[in-house]
Length: 515
Ligand code: BG6
Image 1 (cartoon, protein in one colour):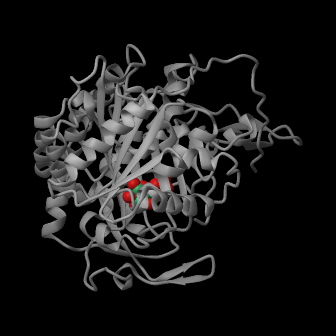
Image 2 (tube, helix red, strand yellow):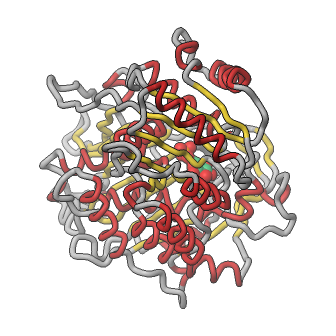
């Protein structure tokens, strides 16, 4: 039986949210999906919550020919189609949007862009904080940055205390070699301090809460180790398939799409040592130290550590769904994985011997993202005839989706006879306690970028370690294109059980939603 506890928000608390600095944001890929679905809604939400400085502008850049007015109309349409309905300040927001059309690979764009940027910076008084957002395919990252460099658009010397930041979307490379090559090219033009490699999972409130939870409370850290933790499960399940992104997904596959970035970053936050301060470099030092402690996957018996699957046709919520290979844009004999489950071991004093089970897949039963810390059984049961094995284990779940929540399962005496026991879940949901839905991850990340704070962005060395870990697997898989089929609407292939150690079982996430 499960129940849920009630949480009362204690008085007080500390909050350091400030309005942003002045800034000018130049978006390459301004007519694309990411801009309209994520970036502009996040900016508008920040504007509406009065978290943006009065001095800011957004300059969209893309190939489509359009005026500022047409760009604003398109943004108006995309924003007003969103469910969130307060548009009273929309006109004020739209007035700060501007647009320049051009082909990114043709030099002629950049002098025009420079005139536009410098004019807007003077007009809005944002000369000291320029942000360039590359919401484009990765093949364009370097060509754009090179030309920005040639036309002095990345130069920080033109104004005292001037900062120019470049935000790079994923995928950052497709394997270790290509990622290092991309990084080397960017470093010829920019300092690491200027590069913001984005991973939107790091902007999610519950993901950020991992560090608060661990290092702002004295009670969890002492039990956060091999002495008390039996194993950990990180699940990122989605009911969506590849939707309109088959072209990208056929090149990427799930290991690149979810593991190399999101899941590994979450794992690092759960397992890293306490940084000496909450400053970007110190947090990122600890993260990369942890990533370096992850044991390389053994290539000789890889199947005991990682399982890949691909969805066949099936049913979710009564809806019949096609197999991955029948999706539009997918090769009929594609061997691209849409599901991965892996067992990861960390070779350090804190975690030696504790298995971390990570899994993610498309077209699973529902959308659920959770980190479950499963604690060891009690060493001995005094509650005869119940043995220690019969008593449930404590599980701490950090829930990211569908609800941003934290839940702890404990065993309690339930009313009735002397030996009547149940598992009870103490849960706190952000929405219930704080009365708001947590802001979208992009809001946090944009604010941090405006403030020049790289804590939640991936540093070059962490990116390199992540690719070092997964590239041998990708190479092995490309030479052996066999993928285990699983039905759409299931929890993935049953073969995922083979990586579990004796006595371990995949959890059904505490909650999941349809989308
Ligand atoms: C993206 C992946 O980075 O993350 C997608 O490319 C995936 O394939 C998405 O669906 C999941 O993000 P979220 O925030 O919906 O869990």
